[in-house]
Every structure is written in C-alpha cells, then in structure tokens.
Length: 192
Ligand code: GAR
Image (cartoon, rainbow, N blue to C red; front, side):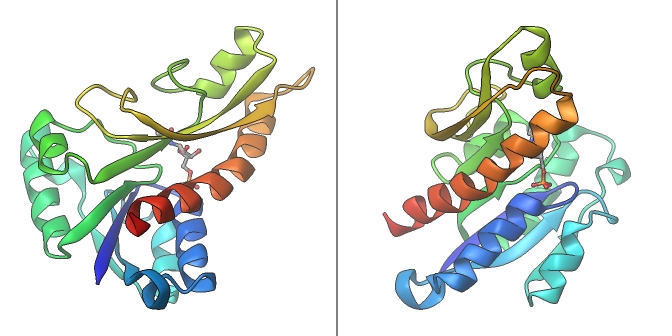
C-alpha cells in the first residue's frame, strides 16, 4: 500500500478534498494508495476532526515544545516515517522546513501555494496580488525543494481578480480551485 501522509496547520480543507477524492475514486482499490495519517503542528487544527471522523490516524506535534527548528523537524520526521510514506503532502502546513527535512523527503514531498508561482512566494499572497494590480491570480502545486515555494511546478489554476476584491474574496475563489487541482496532482503522483 502506498501511504500518503498529509501535514496541516489549520482548517485542512485541502486535506479534506484529498481524502474525499481518495474515497470517491477508491484509491485503495484502484491505485493501492491511501491517506494513512494527518499530522498537525497545532492541536486545535480543525482539520484533525475531519481526519478522525474519516478513520484516519492523526498526530499532533507542537513546534512550541521544541528548542529549535532542527529538533522539531527531526521529531516530525520520526512521526512521519512510522507511516512509511510514498508521498508527504503539505496542505496549509505553515512551517519553514529545514534543509535536512526537505532532503529526507526529496522527490516525494509536495506543497500547495496560493499564488501563481514564481510570483508571490511567502505570505499574504492574495493581498499582494491585489496591491500589484494583477488581473489574474491562482494557485500552484509544486515539489518541495530547499528554497521556500520554489520547487518544480506540477499544476496550476488561474482565477480572475475582480474589481473591488478583498483578499478574503480572492482567497475563497482561489480555494475552490485548490480543492480541484491538489487531489488531481496527488493522484497523478501516486499513480506513476
Ligand atoms: C490554502 O489556501 C493553502 O494554499 C495555503 O494555506 C491554505 C490552507 O487552507 N498555504 C500556504 O499559504 C502555504 N504557504 P486549508 O488548511 O483549508 O487547506
């Protein structure tokens, strides 16, 4: 069985979209793949409830309990490795990763970023797109490499920026597309 481990920090709507796709498309039977675990660095991440309700193992590892980024990432890797993942999926996991952690999962870790990369790496992507006068914004699924938000692009979706858009309105429009392209990108990776 190819195990998918999903890392979240909050709402987990992308994680939920992947879980739903795996159920609806019967990834276990058709592709010998399953979402094996959902791991959060925040105990109150709403996504954990969805995961538990769907019979998926959950783990919480609070980064505040660790003295350094390296120590947290080392422990996180231990937890992830219990599930022997074929793919590690970052889904709103709001942590900067150490180079050692990234290299451990080289070639089998992906991220979703709410901008049309290479534009707007980092935070506040929607407000920055609005402030820059962009007519279009969007979302990117990419492989994770040592540099933040810069790995090879696997998939993108584009949405219009409408006159008077707030960052929240644009984010909601982008999120609809996230839920379409992330399950598709994950499936493409585990199929191949
Ligand atoms: C998503 O919009 C995702 O693209 C973004 O966080 C949100 C998480 O939502 N990720 C980043 O900003 C990564 N830098 P979710 O928890 O509902 O999936």
